[in-house]
Length: 303
Length: 303
Image (cartoon, rainbow over all chains, first blue to last red; front, side, top):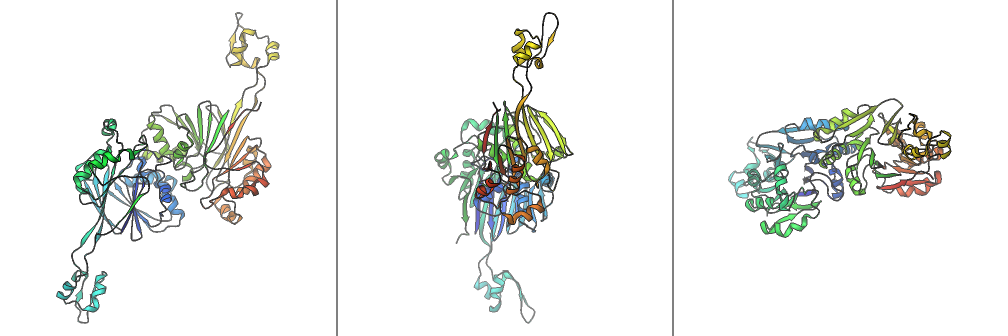
């Protein structure tokens, strides 16, 4: 079970009624955030979620509207006497940028670990999240994220019997521990568990022109979160120049990749009513949601 | 005529319903801001004021809740194609801190000028504002600000006659220009103008224990804006340790200095209803306002 909330839906600058785009996931008491612009700690508080089980923050790139909320969030986490390490994930240069911003938060009661990457893709496994960063098309190096939550196979009675696992060890192995009998024979979880089952997948990409890498990763996603900066076709030339994506372009990616649902976000400050495009967008991809701040869902493993 | 707005009233961290403390003044089309924490650009927009005639930003000190909104504000100002210089005023180290924060706003279409200072007081005259910074008592070097708007004297007919200023030059001299007659005699404005009249004075101090420097500068102020972090006396030991000020302490400063009005601000995030203390505080200093975000007034020269 994966809690998902799009804390804000804005791009470029935070507005009184629209926080900057940031996605937060909660899984088994550990939270992961993607992007943290100015005001994200306010958005988090408005949602009623805490920054305390927040263990991983992923950054798409280092434009101000995606990272300038970091020092304030760190200070707030520090004020709550956190001591557990925080892991920051992002493109090469992350530690340099975060260290510069920490000029106003130089002393924290918890350590920060960095996971920097470059190239087309990078993979990390942190706190139960399988994280893949994939390159998208912006003016500066920028990455989308695929966050997968794997699911173990089911307990398989026949397999346990075939492997002659004593009944008294079944429970233990099912819960991931090894066992050994009095004759020294070792038993491992794979001797009682079936094939891994389908997990959950959330894909997030913003500040990009449409890209094949997004379509590829979006295939089979339970939730696809994409930039839809404007809906008015007159904005297209400017978005092409600044390497951003139209709402309609995001929907066409979804149409091709076929995720279960598409959430649009990163609205331009000049677009006051993104919901006005809903009908047109759903005609391209029916399961399009023109998200609002705090848009949330709970993703469950398929039965 | 001086427009004054307290854009936010929070301390430590921005809350969804309470922006961080920032004071903005508008005078003859030029604005001055004191402190700019995370979300101040949102507060400014909520107030309906623009960052475009903003020419001077003064910083009390470099804790995150007073400066972390700077890079986002700079980006927003840059997006509006501003080209006029922006002047930043603050304690020694300002350029280093602002430059570090600008890691996310490296390229701006306008220049930034710095006015750094140290010592007990420092004076600047910028854009019609007479700015005095004065040292207060915090854990790090921290300054209050006295912002004065001077007022010229009135035109004095008798003085003009005594100085034998020809009638045809009166208007010109009254508006600040010199003049010269056919015999080469020069006339200057002081030959027709009376003594400078009483101007306006706003004093702002936060993140400090009570200090004599605050009382001194607050004497005769039209508006005194002071930190009142908590009202509950149980908080006093902690505020002493962290060098902050209670609401009651701020009121006692006002009682001694006698400004026309006191606005309290920089409320601790744990104080949900600062207005509950209004009666108690007005018993100490009757013209106390337990400010809310956007608290505003227009100060006018006395008749």
